[in-house]
Image (cartoon, rainbow, N blue to C red; front, side):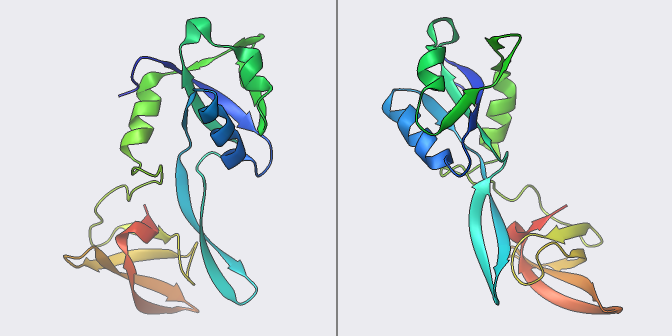
Length: 166
């Protein structure tokens, strides 16, 4: 799945992941930026946004033997190529392949599993983001009924399976 190139880790400048990814792509490099959906509160609204799975980092793929390290480090949006002892360290292809399998075509993480009644989960989206809950039942259309402990009482709430993590 990783084709014929090796993967390396890039550290990008703050809020410059799209800029760095675009500029590396223009230079012929392959990039992989796994994203996750995050809900945050802005004033009185809840906003869903895609954020990098590994804040500050993404993967770049190319032929390791002829990789132009200086060209990557001088790319707009890139802070540096992650190196140890002065040499860029290669990321195992199996790791990148496994991450790609967990993502959709756009690079966003897919739901990791099917939940069973009794599973403890964390909500990742909506007004109850970051709340712990217990799965009660699942419907055929991937909707999940969970029990939330709100102010000492159990409340039953229906959510999408994609908005839960184990």
